[in-house]
Image 1: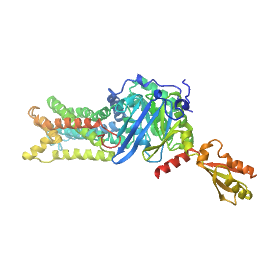
Image 2: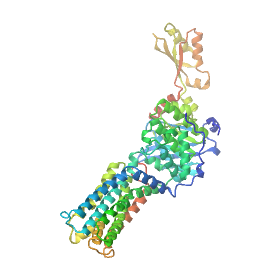
Image 3: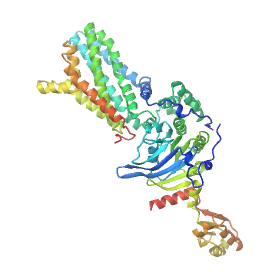
Image 4: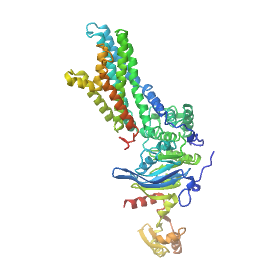
Length: 271
Length: 339
């Protein structure tokens, strides 16, 4: 028979978990992501993909018809695409996944403010991106494009990727807050990402093409990376292309944190 | 060790709570979803150590009431205070409450120990304190040996006990348990009821227990709130509620050859308004008492029927009062509500 004979410390003796609650949530989410199979498997698959690409680019002279700068750019573009997409999917699972697993109520019953719960989850989801960059660094280095190209590619890729991760991670969180179904949340956010990614593969030209490239944060970020790494343009020269990713990151994170404060058990927010 | 409190010491005879000891004060709270009013004008007070049963048929508003009081849902109208904290400070209230939700999910990949440590940290315990609290609570709910096992390997009963332990990580003043014994086997139910008594008795926490199992309420609750269609239709001690459905009818079994004599004796018995035969061949009859007369002679009113039968020298094989249990009161009150 169980016995509850011992009392715990009085609640008044507990430091309110309202200030650092996000660190507790983030730490747990990071453990769930990186100490379980999910994170390491994604990184393993990603590194295998980069290994194959780098091996072909570095050794196969017949197949290696693209310039070294283009190869470095390609590696960074792939890192960017996969890193942002995976972060997006993890953040899209953040709330709707908890709803579906019926674990959200327990979390909402803690004194940690909802905004901090969202922040902790978003940071954990975004942790995929820097890990992807770290994994990509040896491959970029192995392509031997020179120290300047290496630094330019890694730094530019990291900046663009961080902005897009913030934007799309927040978008995933917003959709997740408004969805009871994890499947819907994942499908919708991934669809939005693919729609915005598609123009990078289209031959856009003229003023309309320029406009699409500049207002779409994905095409703008991709073009910025392309121009800096391949064409060797300076950051100042291409700064206009960073406008859309910066605005997307600011707007999406602001909206996410605004509505996360009113996160509720069922889909949507308290009005 | 604190002495186990007697709930009767806390509530007065009318079933209300001494103002100085109120830990939870609910004042006409309502919660609507669009045009549907899930909870309407719910008011009650609770003292430390009380176990209050929240009863009602499906859709009566029990879970919504718990979600409002546990700050998961804001009330549409009304207000409540918990430990003196108004409902407008939900974060501060959450620091004072523990909740076992009806559909509590668990992160199945985590161990019981990790789960409790995580929640203790969320409630502000430092890392070391969280480890101590988790170990202590796991031991108290009988899960110490399974602390390192993934929750996915726990039985339903073990998960419910883990949920209770989670609800206690912050030493709450009020604990809300929504259907804690649902899906448990009789041994698990017994263990859970024991835990509930311990929470109220030794910790002095107020327990709000929502359940479908009326015998559980009779066993552990000091007071009962019966909800129907979002409204409180009865409130009081278990004894009070039972009294409202006090038996008006007795089912009598006599030898078949004495059936007619018994019927005649019963129809002439003091306070009996009618006597009817159910099955003459087997000797079954019923006697219905006058309500006003029973109210006047609450203690021995029904003995008049027995006296009439013995005076007529009828052998009584059985004399069973119909109604008088909490389930009868519950059914009669909720059926009235449905009408």
